[in-house]
Amino acid sequence: MLIIGEKINASIPSVGKAIADRDELFLTALAKDQATAGADFIDVNAGDGRSTDSSPVEIMKWLVDIVQNATDKPLCLDSDDPAVLEAALQQYRGERVMINSVNAEPEKLEPVGRIAGERKADLVALVMKEGGVPRLVEERMEAADTIMEYLGRLNVSEEHVFFDPLVLPISVDTKQGITTLKTIEKLKERYSKAKTVMGLSNISYGLPARAIVNRSFFLMAAAFGLDAAILNPLDARLMSLVKTADLLTDKDPRCKKFTNAYRKGLLVQ
Amino acid sequence: MSEEILTLLKENVIQGRITEEDEGIDENLSGPGAVELTEAALEQNIPVQDIVTKGLTAGMDIVGQRFSAKEYYVPDMLASAEAVSAAMDILKPHLEKSQVETKGTFAIATVRGDIHDIGKNIVATLIKGAGYEVVDLGIDVPTDKIIEYVRDKKPAFLGLSALLTTTMLFMGEVIEALKDAGLRDTVRVFVGGAAVSKEFAAEIGADAYCADGFEAVRILDSVA
Image (tube, rainbow over all chains, first blue to last red; front, side, top):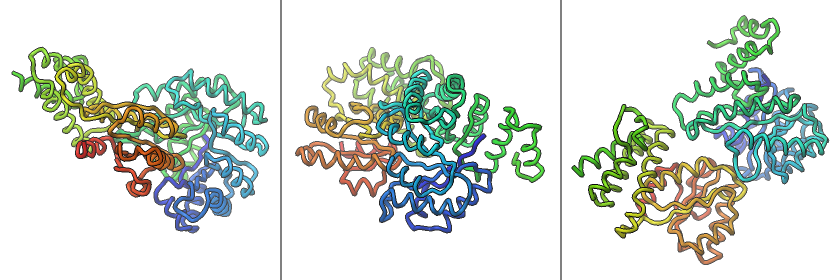
């Protein structure tokens, strides 16, 4: 399971404040801590710069610099603005990089897909079109087809595509858990070289005891073939579950990662 | 007898039972649900106004309190609101006949560029449950379409939703466009959504910021 550390995101109040205050120490530590905790990528979302005196492009470049100076882990550049993504890529020295995200809407798929193709970046693609979040598996697969058609033309190879199957709150529609899982399964079936990725916390919106819902859903998604997750790597219990998921889905030869994690005292039961 | 039926209706709203098939939220109720009880109340010629206030709204008030106290969660609140909504559908022709004034029309939209609909739908359901006429304009609604609707249909209230820091700016655009069209004084504008704050609402000149659907109902009831 590939882990994308989600903490450097301006929509988290403490992080938004650190960005507004230009608190380099706080942000550097947050990047390092996530890397140490086992994140494979560090997501970087600088927000829109509203709380600072900078443009969205300037604030993103500043934040990319802080994170790339703090860790050698590849970055996951997170914005829905193609200009911000382009600037962030220019600022970034690393080789491997992920872009988060596009969907099936041509306006953004076209420019961001082109950038990703030229840079050979991994690209997160949400399986939705304009007109709202599709509630059905088949509608989501149609969006995936549109995305692959475009990306094929823009020289983004299937291996670089990370499909997000969409996670909607179970509290509003109890079918949504199964819908997400089946979408993962279908995506893996139809695009076997592409990866799947999702965030966890949306599933439990509006419910009590959210952590147990998130963790359970994560394990179910792993069983359905989830390849990557955007989560908080500083949550030791969740990271223990990641190792357990790898163990149980034949992604941990001879159980080495699991037993080593245990020996190092990293497994929280 | 009429008191008894309205108390039962209120209890079934609190338990989120739309029909007799449904289970209660935290009590095992059987027998008629909100739909059957509303029909029975009409048969007994209980005034429509009483059915709404003593049965439905009274029940929803308790649901709101339980939600604020974190005893109830989103699915509970939605079940109750749907029970009220189903009852209102039955009462609607009678309300029109008995010339009970409705509390006014609340038009709601997710602004342009934003396709999030879950929060908007929850708020719409709750406001409908509180007895307002709700018109859902949809998601990613262009500003000029909202203006056109306000001009043609003259709703008393307009609710704007946005989840993203990028799209919430279009709430301000809608308010400016209302001013330009000379319509700003005809409608009260409510704003809400994950990215929105009280400060932001004040900054763009909205009439009210609503943290959630129940707050929207509280503010609506205080100004309607």
